[in-house]
Amino acid sequence: MPEGRVVRAVGGFYDLKNTGKEIRARARGKFRGQESIYVGDWVEYSLTPDGGGIIERILPRKNLLKRPYVANVDRIVLIFSFKDPVCPRLLIDRFLLLAEDSSLETILIFNKADLVSESEQEELAGAYRDLGYRVIYTSALTQQGKEVLRRTVEKDVSVLAGPSGVGKSSLLNMINPAFRLRTGEVSAKIGRGRHTTRRVELLPITEEGFIIDTPGFSRLDLDFIDGARGLTRLFPDFAGKAENCRFTGCRHVKEPGCAVREAVEKKTIHSWRYEHYLSFLEEIEQLVAERYR
Image (tube, rainbow, N blue to C red):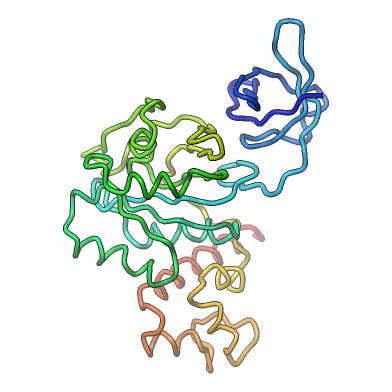
């Protein structure tokens, strides 16, 4: 039975690709109300007389991301912009929680570098390099970072995520103009980008590399995080220090002997990272309280 990878899902149909040719397939009825099929899935399918296909079986996945739902991913590429729209660190850290939860390699792209000075670039993004993330500066207008970005995604499967309007589609067009993806302007009224990617789609960069383009996010809830301990593990700059807290299950708020707060005081943890942690913790605990009302 032939195998193919789901490259897009449209209105109950799934476009499958393996050796260059795409097959439009439907799912066998047994999938209805049971296991879902996602972009990135490898499936077995049977051919129909009209040249289409019927998906018979989903092959075992190596992973499944849930925000957005995509399967068999190797890395996450988070894209932000220096300006138009400005991406505050609180929003960047929120996306990093999602990336850290996946346990995948995470790359940070800061786009529209042509709109700010080098010192402004480092002021916003340099701290994330210090935290151990790989950081790339790009500009779709000047082509800055084109080759570095292309080499980063030329093998395996990368999923792109980020707020609306930061230039995901423009960067994809930069590294492969054949995509001809729609791009949009940032709304002057609301300061956010308009969605130009309407669906999740797997795009070929090279014969060995694929990118999954996703719609921009206007918000990202934290309901996937389980309390203070779950949040701490998603802050890599906290995790090692938290092991030295006096109390197991320390929330790092007011507990005596908290090694995380001590690190903040000694400036080995950025104060703004700690403030973001407290903001996220309050939000998570409110979600938990609402869940059990």
